[in-house]
Image 1 (spheres, rainbow, N blue to C red):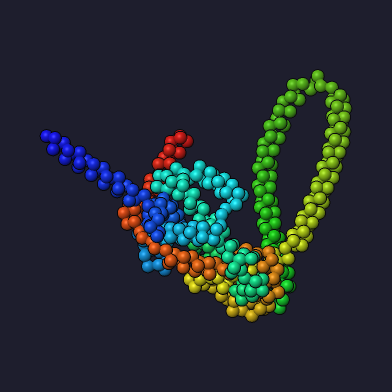
Image 2 (image 1 turned 135 degrees about the horizontal axis):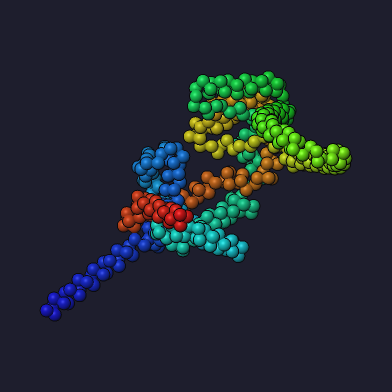
Length: 463
């Protein structure tokens, strides 16, 4: 009996140890040079990627079985791709963290205060869901810290004084080589599902485009602003005319209704007056009535004139002030932004697949176009009038106003290459038990279950 009890106790101990070990084995997603990386960090990245992919499919009209759908250009399902991306981002997190420490960098007091404030708000908003899917507050904090470390390291290497910082001349050259400068007028195609209506509306849009092209085809890049402003004025005039016509139609409809009501009322009053006259005629003092009426009329007309004069003066004053204010605002806006009608686009940063889109085809056309020449273009979205400008005339000023953006565009790929090297220098090993336990299907189900539960609770509370 004692031996049986000892054996039972031993088996229970083994079972408990196995259970504890099994749980601990899924507390980390992978190891980096022997150091465990929390599973919550991996889950956080997985959730982020799943939501991005599912939202993309939703806007494409795909709502059924999203995890089994193919990710365009990747040759794998949303489930497979999301898992791969989450693993990669977890590796990036660790590599950046180690490099941040190796460079002796730290967060400033201001950054810590800002981070804590953001995390407090974000956790109050999303903490319940994150805990439901397996992301602790500490893991979420680490994910957010990664973006700050990434930014700090980038600045450390590439901002002024950094070991890899480009010179101003190099940045200006980058803009000259990569950017497009242009002005464009768009005449959008019809979205009607009726083919006849669609054809008519598209023909009208094309004819309107051609009308303005004939007016502006000899204009220079600077003069092209006049054509844009002409179209804006014409569009405003059309809108005002349409609004005025709608108001007149509404007034006419209202007048007809009022006339009908007035006729009915007058008929009723006349009959009533006739009855009263026949009954009370002998007792009415006509003289007193006429005097009273005359006095009232005199007072009312005087009051009405004064009131009308005051309102008219007030209206004129308001209109003058409004007109002056609008005029001043427009002049100030023109002074503040001399490039209001033009666009600068980093064509060199576009990926090959982006050039297959409607906007990509437009950018390619502009890139290949001769500068300072008015041209027409058409894609599935619209008819265009375009003029390409000389980037070199503006690149220095553009850099002064957009230094951070240009630096990130110019050095982003180089920095990502550095991170890739840091990752390759680290010995990563996946914890397959954790990755299996926190599969894309499992995490997505937890997300959808949580949202459904929340929706039902909200509906119940509202009712």
